[in-house]
Length: 510
Image (cartoon, rainbow, N blue to C red; front, side, top):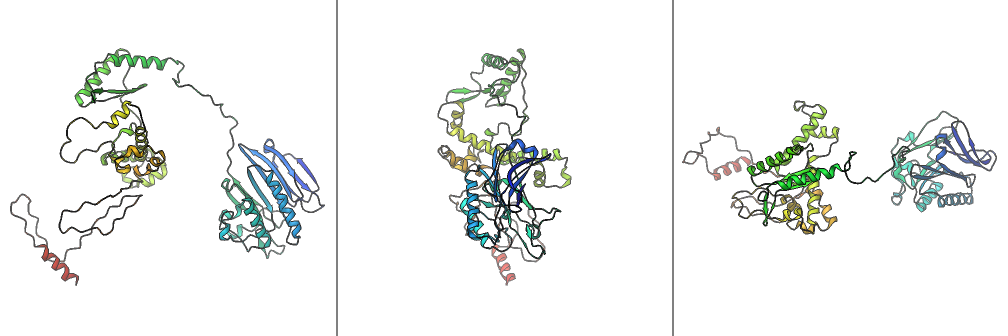
């Protein structure tokens, strides 16, 4: 706590049972500045310096933060300009020798009022009262030293802003301020009431500082390997698995890519099998299972992660719906909510605060695609991605989606060239996700119908997809509609001409 107008002589540091009192005073019964510090922070105090009877500095270390707190007591309105100039020069001297984090506080005997347009860098919109000459001097000083007036950064009621009142209680002003060059550290500032005889009310600020843990475990750089007490166990496991794979006759199994067969991928204890047919895959699994059982290894065919291997997925409509449905079901199970409760999934997501699994999976795929595009060697990852597939033509009809189709829709057909620029590729990451998907229209195909309506305006949103539906005018009231003819009958259904319908519409509209 900083104290203005201590009214004690000397430059002393007094230690009591629960607190430490530091102050400076030079005039008997007048002026003075000081601090009252909790005794638990005794080891954090670096130094206390009294520059004059109006300016005192306390350097304190809290965690990794070195803070210089400057407590002041400014001259009143009746003081001369010389005293004011000397006072602010003393503060500048204290700032020059201060740490990185500076807090300037105390009784400035100035009214700053509402901010002007050119003062938004040091003041916010929550001012109080009408500015006077001393207030303008304080504003100029804050602009020169890049200090923000924290009192104006938080919205408070009018009766919670004034810090001084006249002896008769007729006048109330805000003349006590807290300034700092690190306004982001402050979470709140408030004027509090205390039952003691004074015409001032204390101003309390709340700061958020990172305090280093005293019982933090010392960091040790562990080498890669097993977390068990047997460091040779991973090496033995890899050697056994290598021996099993080497004895399997898979030379003509798997995917034929430019004359070479790719039938499996493995990393540590993870194994991926590749095949063109289900019967061939079944054969590979059975032979691998039989060979592993002989040496005491067991296959784990399940994974507990929802997005495991999502870098290789094709995000079709069916796949995206399954991911969203699965995650929503898991969240309802976590909160013990049933579908009959009719609670929207958006409110459930606000409660669970879970990451969107679909968005997370699409981001991982986007990062993986950029990594593959920047590869320069001929590893299997790069060769398979550039592989155009087995020879032959695709079946007629709408072709199945490919792995890179959703990437092409965002980055274009030359997405591999775009991925070489990491910054540009990262900027397109949001476009490939579910919430930030957008469509770029390069051309519009002409409608084959001769009387089809034309689009006069095309609106493209970069945040959401917009679907446009054309409203059909309501049919005029008349006799009840005839039953629909069966489409299996050869003769056409009975209906009136389109010209007759438009004539009725025009006559009714008139």
